[in-house]
Image (cartoon, rainbow, N blue to C red; front, side):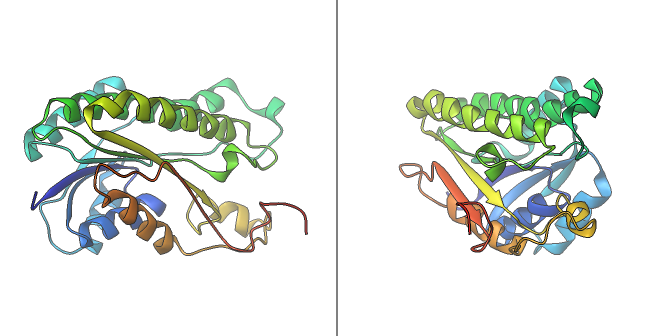
Length: 242
């Protein structure tokens, strides 16, 4: 197909913004999804002109997600890519100090949001002609090497790995590929408070490198899949001691 259509959640900042711009530059037409319109429009302005569009949506809301995907399907006619990127973290405090609403908010956005979007795009990808497509989940190295005081974020990223595997199995008979990128120390808004507070002096990588990796995953033919990719700063203290 000459034109490829995708949807990126959390497209207004950080990895979502960088990936969206890179995908548009690589020829994708995207629906940029987020809770605030202004950052989405700023993302779109950074890319070359295209038929891409911006849509306000809270991914933790089943009603908003269903409405958004129906509107995007009607606008584009199909969806070839979903990048489940929307995510957040709670305060970095001992878990006994976190309130239940703080826990639930992270779970609702990071995990439930990814599930709701996956559910909608699976329906579209199974029914369209030609059928199939690709789903990329934004995981994290926190799924296997968490930081202290990160229980909600870490737990949801563990769960995203399970969602990736289940989606891969459920999508396989319908030419739907699902992979996951686990990112370590990309310099984004999510890590900025930790950096500015002196909470880490670890090496960082530019977010453009993450965007390039996502484009590489997205542009594979459907008979091939990057099931899991770990992209991190070379000198990040993740692998072991020393």
